[in-house]
Amino acid sequence: MTIYRYLLLIILLWATERVKSQEIIATVTINTPKLQVADPKIFKSLKNAMTEFINNRKWSNDEYTQDEKIDLSIVLTIEKENSATSFSGQITIQATRPVYNSGYNTIIFQHLDKDFTFSYGEFEVLDFTENAFASNLTSVVGFYAYVVLGLHYDSFSELGGEEYLQKALTILNNVPSGAGAGWKMADATSVVNRSRYWLIENLLNVRVQPMRRAFYQYYLLGLDLLTKTETRSQGLANVLKSLEAIQKVNDQYPASMIIQIFTIMKRDELAQLFLVADVATKRKAYDLLVKLDGAKADSYKDLLK
View (cartoon, rainbow, N blue to C red):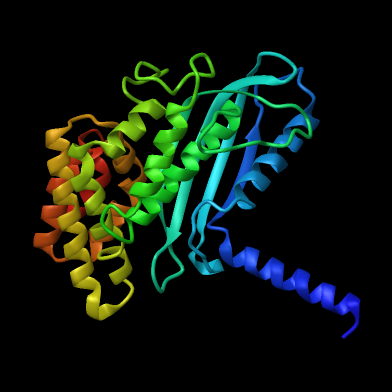
């Protein structure tokens, strides 16, 4: 074997290993509907930098095959140019994971963060460490990456994502005062208790643990069983049990941020999921969903037919 071929083989093996190892496949979209001054080249550079930062980083110690990876969509809408390198806007995060033995991806996290201010210069290399603050940009992205991983692991085992949610908390605790809105107890632009602080507070709150345990029942013992005819009824029964557990959390911790996030991201899925169930199960599902998501009760009216 020539040296050239040997080096090529090494590169291919390295690339294959990277494809297997990275957990997240991120797609970054940047919108600038209100900006007329900023050089658009900086946003192309930012998009590439964010994509590489997320996709090239190893976020856990586990190896993922291509079919197991988490699809992460980030939409950054920049509404204000504070300076040539400082911007404000909002960031939308949506993450999905595959449902076992199907072509369907289910949402595990979806959130609109309206308190996002950051600095970035063209071709800037994004620096990040979990235990120290480098920039608001990488702290926000890293925070949400660990939240997504936490919920992803929760969907495979009870409280399985604790390690990653604690990492998100560490990032939050290392953000200095004045670094940007959204990190503190009182930070919430539009709705009370909707900041990053309250998101991680909810996820790590003892009162919310039954809901996180229910995620395992919802996803692994619920959705992942629906693809086979012989386990479909058991899967639906487990989803129903998970909703009962989540409703109990809602009773204990009303109007919590994580309940609102769950109902918004699961509304369409749940409205369709129980259409194949028997009449009694449909009615139970309807009653639970209306309690959880009363403002959108009409979304579930087909379950009464």
